[in-house]
Length: 321
Image (cartoon, rainbow, N blue to C red; front, side, top):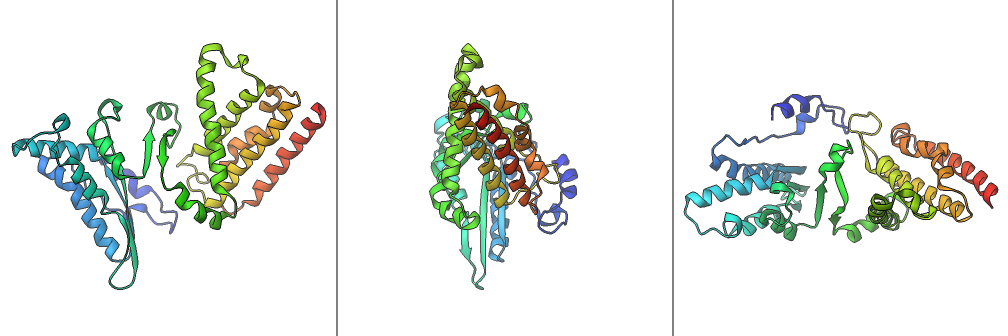
């Protein structure tokens, strides 16, 4: 908490340029505080969020973590001599979790304004065991789950969200909204990118056994494109002045360029070009660095990157036609 209090005042709100701390409320209940205070802290946080929601604000609540709150709930339940259920948690654990998450939502206030509360609840399963009660009950009530991956964090890949273990059931609901905002079929692009990342996961197991040279060039291209998606799109540097914040249009354009590169490269590889030629193209490094090279206000530079890639691909296409 000391680190949070020291660093938050220096973070700048991208909306107004003011310190982010000016619109942040922190409720700190550390492990050395009374168990009743730790159990009550999550209710304090959601009540404050509802207070600002009723004033017409849109509030984001980060609860870190619901697992620690559930442990405090277990201690209180034990001292009250209540009947324990699975792993010592009280039998009403699922009900308490459901009551907490159902307080999120979008409302119209009595004065005609609109406000909302968005809950991001962190779950810290002991030993990374997703089968423990808090994780299982949480996944029953939510429709979106971000699985943080320790190996990604160790590799300095942030945000360290595992794209295969994470899921969202809102995809079909927001597809129309994305199409209105960016004017392209976002859902098809997203599904194509996920197919490449899923295929990379399967091929990585083969590479560990026999090495990448045993794969045909088309499958090695999948590994190359997946690397571009991971490093050039999914990885983000919060400390970079350009990459710290990306508009929807920039995100879609970056993914569109990477998938366009994949389609052009796939045709050339089928004509007999070795994957090493594709890997050594100057445009590959440009695709990885475009998130820091192109500011949100200068998206026309993306067209220049696409022209550069098309020119390099056209020369290869003519050579291996």
